[in-house]
Length: 124
Image (cartoon, rainbow, N blue to C red):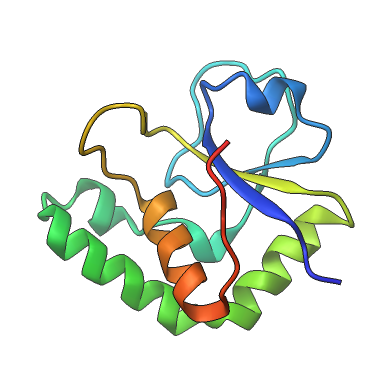
């Protein structure tokens, strides 16, 4: 069975009310105490170079898409299914996507996943 998954940010109210699994896809984890357990999907975590390397948004997008291609949809889906254990999953990072022209790797992943599989990844 394919896992059902979404994206959001740690600061959203969604993870606190979520009946499924909350999973980290950020390079670091929140420094504040979370009100929920946090799994991790390693293939979706950007590299240290992407986060702290001072690269442009375009370079980040290219590097992250290459990372996704290297891991492939099957490996990513296996990792998500492993943390899901039959429940829906919300993939979390820090970025606030409510701002105009906001950029975040979680939406790069969502677009890439749609292109590769035809499956939408909704932002909660």
